Image 1 (cartoon, rainbow, N blue to C red):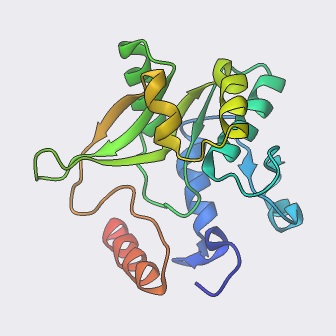
Image 2 (image 1 turned 180 degrees about the vertical axis):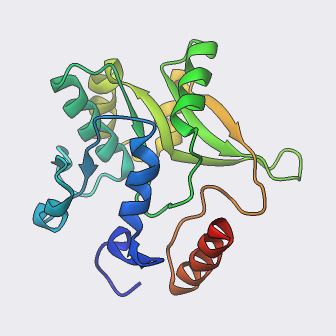
Image 3 (image 1 turned 90 degrees about the horizontal axis):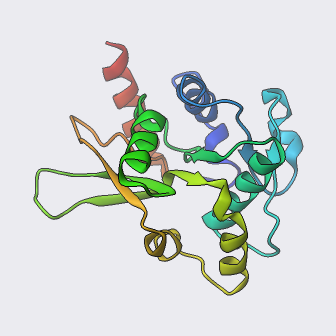
Length: 192
């Protein structure tokens, strides 16, 4: 994609991150952005920008930990996470993840999509709800070398919450110029 933050690329005349925040603001508040490097690039959003507290690139779990630490500091007991390059995630994501975790008695829930082919569920582990009470366990696990979200979440009984795939995958993310072209077509279809 030419380097830089994919979430700041324009989709339909506005940054992808703006589209993500519009969807997220109806589901969760307060909101923070997890990003490393120069945080000034997100200054216009007026949101806290959380850098990873674990040195080196420890992957998505380090971002989750940064969110948990921040949430703990403001007295929240859980966080919802979404990827900033996925502009079409479900508008009921947080509600359904929360219900799934509550009904199963799990401290965690992640989104999965279930295409028409049975047994072919696709995990979307960065779209999840996370109990802040697990933050010390997560910190120890990352420090011990755990990097894969599923490797850490599954032993905690993470609930998989199914989301249907309609005409397109609601968790479609923009990684390439071809993906951006597809996202533009999906956006036009939603606005029609």
